[in-house]
Image (cartoon, rainbow, N blue to C red; front, side, top):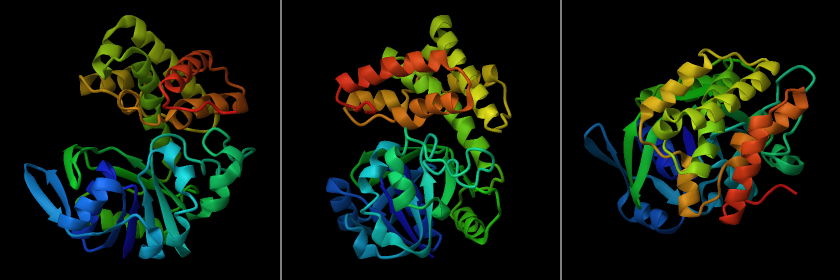
Length: 328
């Protein structure tokens, strides 16, 4: 089975090592010192108190890899439109694209059913460009839960978690998603095929929608935000609004909002990815985590005043830091 990991950073590299050990023919798309180090000495994974090194094919030229069975995209959402053209040589007639990213994906309304079926989302796919270049029929949803860190070029540290929730947009248990699940299970990962992948997307988004932008505005960790009554109230209001939007789209939540907040608080002194990106001057995932929820709220007629307010603030904070360009 040929698998290409596009964006082989911490999560992508972790996945690449384990899939290679499970027998897949893995190619990692990376660049810079990380790519040079992988080519020289392989890719090392610190996990479960030990160290494992895999010799994998690594390149910054997708054409060198050629068509794949699966392309697993582990880039952050703002980066994908920039590489959609470069990804084309990896796509054969039956190649599946696995969107292992946070937030609402561009294919969200593909095979959704109802009045919004087939509708692109402007916040995550301006002008429908991704819809055209990476047709949603190719896509498999993937919700990522492991925590990993790129400690130095070609060396990744796994902290916790091994779940990758998989699902077809139409809810079917297709052979392609089943085969991918079997491969990931052979690699020691939990990779269930979920019949309602959008429920899983929203459950993770629920926390990212709220804690991420509030952390970027305050500098607070998860426990600090949840432990302060004022910021906790802001987060809760955003989550309640997001839940109302999701439920208007047919999503079901398996936990109530206060238990979801407690779960985030228990993670402790953790900086969200959006805060880390702001501190490091990197592009921030505002559109896929927050802006799209406001867009969906307007679409379904659910008001999102707290989301809208925090969105405006974090957009300006990020734009002034050079980490975000506001939509035209």
